Image (cartoon, rainbow, N blue to C red):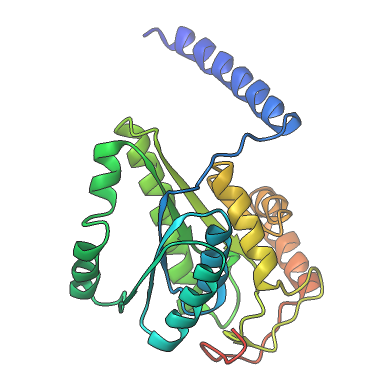
Length: 255
């Protein structure tokens, strides 16, 4: 194609994309139904996993719950069954490939291949705002969350290239959550999130097929600023935000 013509096509596509985004912003998003859908929740024994399982139970989804902790998993299952959902539980250590495939043979048999054959499904990646913004003294954590965001983006693009438009993807990116994972977190701008408000935002993102869910949503603006502002100005903003914590302590009793 002629370069000048290609430029005109690009500009036309750009204008159309802006108009489409404006319409989506002004009109209420259409929500899909997940009643009767098979939903696998990993890390379901506590925290975000348990709260997400409860939310899908309220929508009458069919739940398959995984966790390495049997006792917490049993408690989550009882809560979800009390909400009227059908539940199957498996004690699975997701760091061990053989346990994942063993459990998969008893549930869904396979995950993404089955979704691709049916061109139907939804894959949720739990990342963090730390997958977009770096935080001092959390190098390993930030690196792992950047990887999670990258996985989501690459998978989304690959599914699109394969024409699998029936498989949706969502990536959750919250700031600090009150789960006990980080000891005494604080920030001057913003607040520490509660599990239920994060899960509410995640569920809205899933039902409306949002690709990236920031909690709070103003993180989108912060991401834009990071790409536009000079380094000195960004460093000053980070000082204003004043993110602090004592230590990363892992799963706390209040998670």
